Length: 247
Image (tube, rainbow, N blue to C red; front, side):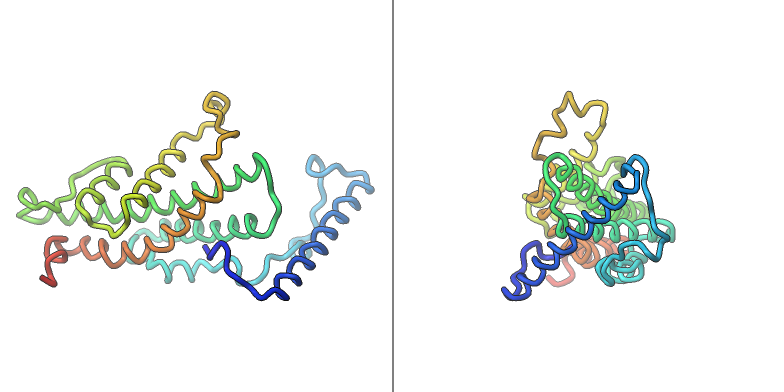
């Protein structure tokens, strides 16, 4: 999850473009060699031994430990398997980022890659917000004043209901537009069914594009710290006391 268009020195950009041309030519040559050998990738294919395949640049895909620590995942989740799954999904976001920023992909395939990347982010956002909401609800259940508290978190089932409750109580410093973007991306995720794609014209719409992807990336960047600072304390202490502690 990086700045989509940072500036770099012209000479560096020129070298990268030159390198990309060479890499593209070598990849094309590899595929030609396979076809000249009688194979028709991807129907029938050849794969070198694992260590002899193309290597991802080191440090591009960040480690599980990086995400566990940087996203405070043990503070959000007590289940180690969920911690791992969220960390792996964050690693997957690095892979999508690499593909989208390093390869020339166009048409419906580009849309499908953006779709996969956006859905991945939405699943992470849903996990973080959903877990915090459930934990706040559990704490509210132990409070003798919950029937009279404006910050009481009722038991709800869906992520949409949880997000609406958090927004209505002003508990996250996200803009109304950002809340709406999360809702829209979540709605798109829930409408994905291949067998209805033609009916919904899913593969020809521009719903999943770079613009939506970059907006979700920005939200994802900010959300982890906002949740950690604003809502996570309310899983162990009444939000009302946090809200008015500085007044």
